[in-house]
Image (cartoon, rainbow, N blue to C red; front, top):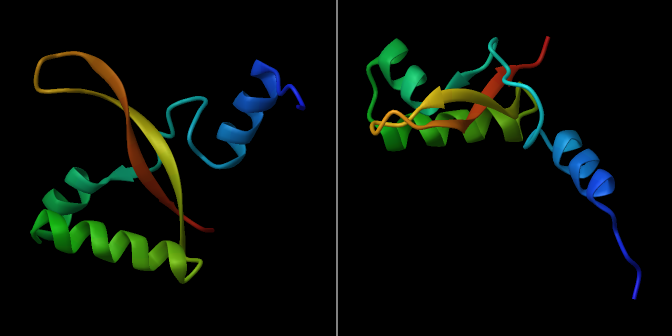
Length: 80
């Protein structure tokens, strides 16, 4: 069995847009809902369609839960 170390896992997560720094230029699904006034399910669907079309990439953004705990939320950034 091949052993994959922590740094290799972190690099893979970062490459996939799932780890690292908060991407403040990205928007979360909830921010998209507020921006366009659409239901949450519509927002999530539209954002995923943008990803599939190559117009956006998934990333993460730091934020607070309703309980005040700081976590990373899935977010999307437009491709330049």
